[in-house]
Amino acid sequence: MTQTASAVASVDASTADELLAVENLSCTLASPRGALRIVDGVSFKLRRGETLGIAGESGSGKSMLTRSLMRIAPRAAELTGSVRFDGIDLLRLPLSRMGGYLGPQMAMVFQDPMTALNPVVPIGRQITEGPRRHMGLSRTEAKARALELLDLVRIPESRKRMRQYPHELSGGMRQRVMIAIALACDPQLLIADEATTALDVTVQKQILDLLQDIQAERRMAVIMVSHDLGVLAGRTDRTIVMYGGRVMESASTRELFTKNRHQYTNALLDAIPQMDQPRHTLLRAIPGVPPDPAAVLAGCRFAPRCNAAIERCHTEIPRLEPTASGSDHHYACYVPVNRDERGIA
Image (tube, rainbow, N blue to C red; front, side, top):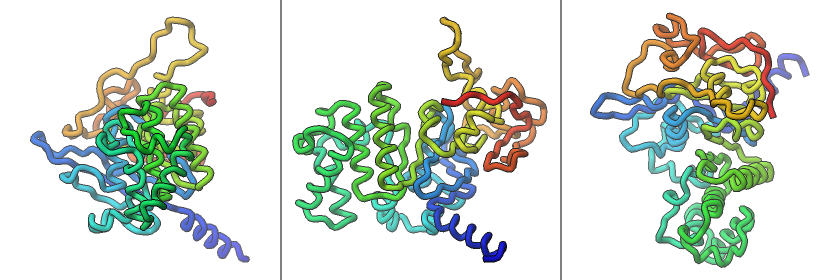
């Protein structure tokens, strides 16, 4: 094979392995104060079997981004850009056809299972609904499927749980039920939106280990949303950092932790408690508050809170630029961090 033919084959293989391609996605909501740009020009790609982390403070646009991908954002939301799932642009599909994607192709594990689950419907019926609707299973087949899923997510006494209601289960079990529902139709993409935020650290680790095991077994692509960079550190292949609806930095997770370039990423990492710090050391907080989505800022949205900001940061919007190393590492900062490599667990 010639060098040109080899390069073409490599590109074709890469494209075939690509599951999701998001280009310049924006989500705008109308409000009495004017248009709210919740997601602003986000682009990224996701391969089959890959895990992508999305990090940022509350209000950075992470959850609205994932809802925009699945077109479950508020009805009043205006979505622009492109979301190509397995080659099909979901933003161009009629909403009536999205039902064929939500469940069988992509599914979400929501942050609070107590509000995501129907409180007056037994667990079993909530799990069997998807397989019966999308996979055409009979009642008996769907029940067997639900029992199999409850065993898969390691819920004991699965037959008993099928008859119980959400309030009869612990927080960890409810989250496992949410995972079972999300996996019921064998989706290619699973989105975990702050799926372990309300759980204690022991249960959190169990849930994250479970997701990792299931992903490896099924070769699903996973988007893991979290404000906790520690959750993403050892469980994602790549991570994007969002602020004010925009991507501030994007890199392999290891490179993001060891060679971060954006001042906002640096501030988030500095806010993580360190075991080697002296006792009673004050946590390093980021001053100020996230930007108002209704405000029109001329420059970088993080500039008002950034100690390193220069005049240009307040007047020009920085574009995502690749690092000099040529790796898949991009950042949008006029005053990039220049420091020794960090350690990573």
